[in-house]
Image 1 (cartoon, one colour):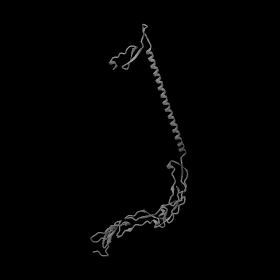
Image 2: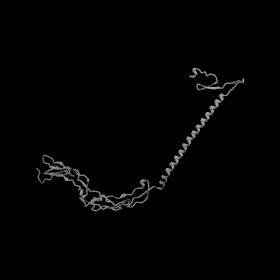
Image 3: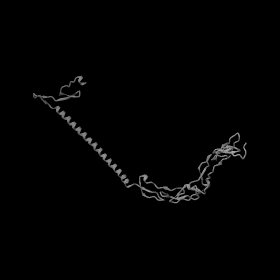
Image 4: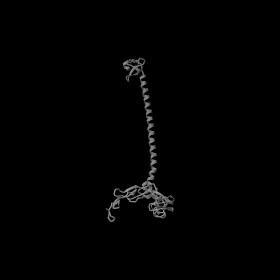
Length: 269
């Protein structure tokens, strides 16, 4: 039988109760009844709007924090059965103290200064900081941070004017790139004109050659007809009738003028 003076050693997720080691309730739950000689610990889930983030023997869960809008707070992370709700000040405001139960309006950060959101959660004054080397702010704002200078190299440009804490870097094209930008369209126009002239010459030259061939063909055909129409003298001095040519099977056949052309049916075929 267990006596009050007897020591009982239990595991981390257990607790001692009347000489017994009872199980703790896991995160997100609360204790309903403790263990006894016949039963283990009985647990149940936390009700809505409450949480329990560790192993416990408590018979209640903790309510979530409420982010009051009239104090300038908004929900950053909604709570659940194991975690509390996390509040933060809305844009343009900062925590009034370290507990951050209420918020105050930020004072505008002047040009050359940037708003640091992380410090707005922990500081009681408007968290404006001077822009570090390589950053700038050219406006007076309650929310705008310092922005990094533009990288001219990433854009393939060169620095025309250095940046300051109130102005960005000014980039410009390099002299060589500017020359190439002007040279490329000029070259394209010249090449286009040259190609057009070549095409024009080739087309008109082809028409001239075709016309000359047609003229030569007509003259040759007329010459053959003239020779075929002349009278051919014979050895006895007699004139013969003009000779006509008839195509037979694609071959010319001489025939005297005035005589009927007789070609057999087989020859015609």
